[in-house]
Picture 1: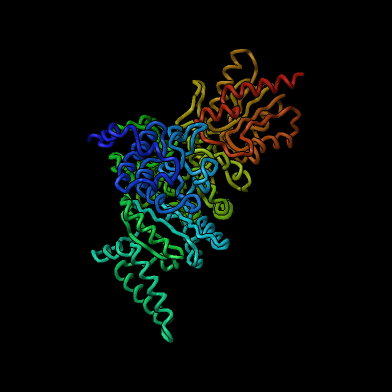
Picture 2: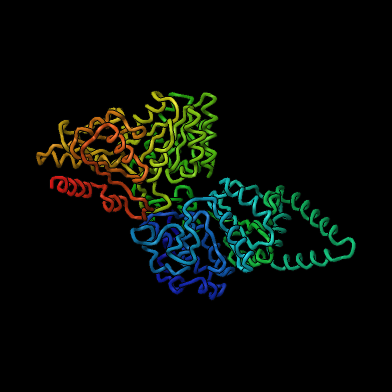
Length: 636
């Protein structure tokens, strides 16, 4: 099918409306008749930029009209808009002074793919994870009430945020916080939200979205409540009759059971109706949910047809919708290896948290649907759920991104390590993820794993190591195990490398005075150093940790006799594996010098992975400089 959007892009390449917008006030100045063209220009800009830089495409295309309406109905940043999840903010960024820098999206020193307060006063909080917006917005609305401010707090939910349990904790509290100006926009782009039925229900939904309805309702309630003797009781009866009628028509009054008013559903691509609905919602002086329906990927045919595939993506060809890179990666390989083992062992189950495609589990989910469980954005639930599977004879494998596993520290301690039941956690995107930046880099999991007793953690460098780790944890280990692996494809592999399945391996001269210790994909850079040193006649050995928790005693013994030991780690320094290894050396009588190179206590900003590793001296060039500088200083 020809790409219609591409033809439209040729016609509007000047983007005459968008290039004049420097703040939300400029959106308000446009005539209503100009807004469809503005939406078209926005979509063109987003598609063009993401096709080069990668990013979240389908979700952003679905909220273009919504964002226009929000900035026309509300007064940002006095009215504070909290985006959940923050990857829906591309249109918002275009309207808040970042159009001229939008081509730097997700690049080093460029603008983020998520909301960031240090970029703009219109970005209220960092929002890279899900299901936190209602809690934050409720806090803002409550502070406004305390301080006598009439501003609004707006939480925009989308992309499955409603599947996160924290939302329900927030709704439960919001229902008790009446007289607060909190508006929750529920962007329903295909989630399993119960549908309204019947023509009358649809007509009433539109009627209840009009400002006139709420003005009349407010006046009626005020008048009735002041009637002598019967006012309050009559008002309560009227409310009950209205509620019963809505329950009959809509089949569910779920949100209002929390004490939160409900409006909708509303066409999320009708800007005029959205603006009128928001104006109506502003008349309700209590928490209110505005339910809108949108099409994920709207305006770009390939994304509309396959919104999941065009959710978080790399670069692609705008004309055809084909991805420019389609090589093997650790996620797909892990999914393949787990699929193969599941064919032989009916106990194996796969569990994930709304990441079945990103973690390579599509084939598993299709072939073994009775053993595949996507629990939604509920990582905390996934671990005790896996515990239950394990307690009744299954072998659960919970596959999760490193950054999202951070939500589960309590469950890792109580429901994973303490129980000593046979469970496996596969930590995808471990280490630097690059373009997604601070909120998604997986450099912290080793430190929090390192403080949890009675678990085993493996960190493979190559696909063969990954398969060995999976087999070991499935069949040769008891109790809780973790396998962590990086984003992307296999790194450089020297010709001499062979997978052994050992807890550690030693390469190079056994009598060397210099030892490099590392794990994961950083071993690839260490292997280059080994080859370089060997060619120049210098004696060096590389100790490769395949199992990083607990640190293998044999690996420590291999390093003790060396004059200088260098540990290179793609993880946080404080509490990481390098600190454990150094402590083990000292405890075993090490008298040489030890140098640990890892990420300092910081949040690592976005950039290409290779560039970040170079900056922090974790590539071949950087490691060479560290070793040379340290050894020269030691010889003085």
